[in-house]
Amino acid sequence: MTYIPAPEHSVELDPACTPQTIEERSFAIIDEEMPPPRPFEGLLWQVARRCVHTLGDTEIVHDLCLSQTALEAGVNALLAGCTVYTDTRMAAAGLPLRRLTPLGVTVTPIMALPGLDALARAKKTTRSRAGLESLAAQMQGHIMVIGNAPTALLGLLDVLEQGAPPPALIVGMPVGFVNAAQSKELLRRTAWPHFTLLGRKGGSAVAAACVNALADIALARRGLTQAAAL
Image (cartoon, rainbow, N blue to C red; front, side, top):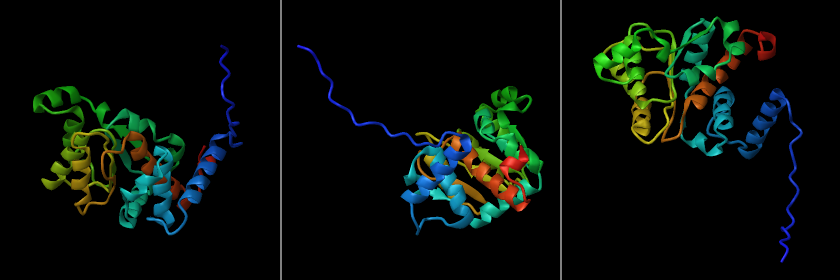
């Protein structure tokens, strides 16, 4: 007996094929699927939409915690040429220089700090948490991005509660099943400017997406665009 496969419907491809047109088309689709009224509007929608785009999930907007105060704090820090500290090299890789260099912003992965292995062993903790503790006196005016390790976010909250000068903005979006949701809920309850995504979802990519959205806003305020910054 010869097997004859059932006919399949044709697959219609979207004509968008360049990075810019793909991103523009993606944002248009998100806007169409999430018409007003939305949980966020204006500049906050730009941040939320980029998070949706990064994770490919429109439902996350209901778990995003974003505020205009945090947005302005982050944009002003970028305009001042701050350092963006990330808990992983992966998060740092998600922050393209074409956005940040024109603003005078530098990116430093905490994992790249010198002597971190020895410090973590001495403190009997993770490298990310040890790195956060070592930065306690240097965070003020800068942006802390945590997309992977709940221990890093918990460590950051600990040093802040102990009186360390707070950063301009905390982007706390660790992902996972152990203390990720709990650490983000603790962040949500603080008064420090922050962006977070409640629950288990998160990750380095979406944490970096928040900073990229803020960088686009900062570039626009300086009269630049990504294209002009290249």
